[in-house]
Image 1 (cartoon, rainbow, N blue to C red):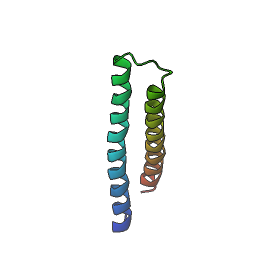
Image 2 (cartoon, rainbow, N blue to C red):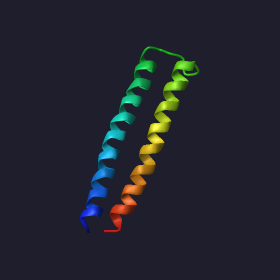
Image 3 (cartoon, helix red, strand yellow):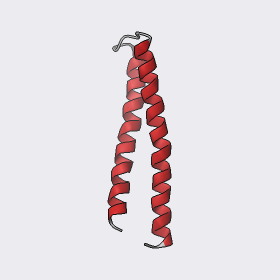
Image 4 (cartoon, rainbow, N blue to C red):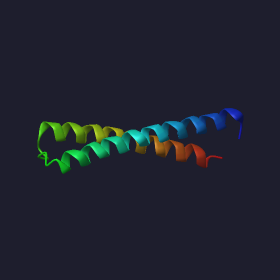
Length: 73
């Protein structure tokens, strides 16, 4: 594995970590809204769910790219 390839893996891992924190922050926001008994069909809950889903999907895609790239070595 070259230095450039190692650097790419490390960069991807860093992005995964940061994005993972974002996903968990948005999951916690959903949990707090549910605990405050905000209706699931309210605009506030829908917006929070949308934010979570976007971040979660992005994390899953990046994870797949990272695993695929890592398996090449």
